[in-house]
Amino acid sequence: MLNYIWSAIVIISIICSVACGNTHNLSSAVIDSGASAIELLMTMAGVMCIWSGIMKIAEQSGFSKIIAKIFSPLLRLLFPSLDPEGETFGSITMNISANLLGLGNTATPFGIKAMQGLNRINGESKTASDEMIVFVVMNTASLQLLPTMLGTLRQSYGSKAPFEIMTCVWISSACALAAALVLAVGINKTGLGRK
Image (cartoon, rainbow, N blue to C red; front, side, top):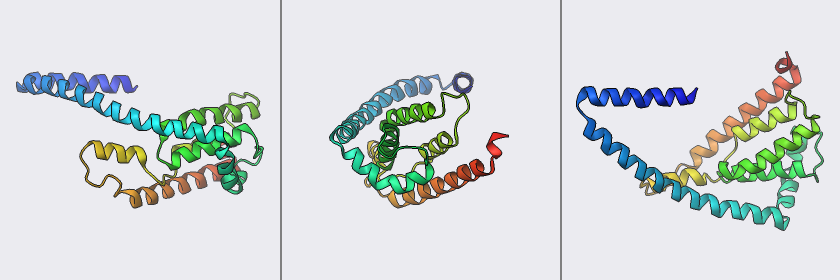
């Protein structure tokens, strides 16, 4: 569906550009945006590589087990069937840690591993378990303590203080996560999602 939407936007832009006689501006915008997209991609790739490496070191050094112990009281309430020493629990904690650092792209591999583990526990069913739903909600409406990627984006576009938004990010992400978890757990307990 998004392909159709983007295609329609491009076609409408071209038609409007030709109709208004602004084809020069259109061609300049295409060239400039292509160059800025590559520049942004390289900036983001550098940040992602650094933090992905740090997260991999944390996982292999056993630091992820320390993080799992810190999060385990809360996560045991949300994922009661998981073994706190298990690989799936560790993947969930690493996913949450990456999201806390504002590294959504780095969190993705841990999220996929966690979802695969939750699906195994669910008996490879085609219907998502309550724990799978809670995890997707937590991953989507994640709490961010350090909005790394957002700060990088703001800095690449010339912001003098790219992390001045931290308080707003804390408040909005905490509210989003709390609301999402209350809804997900509430719907799971009432059974409305199964009807």
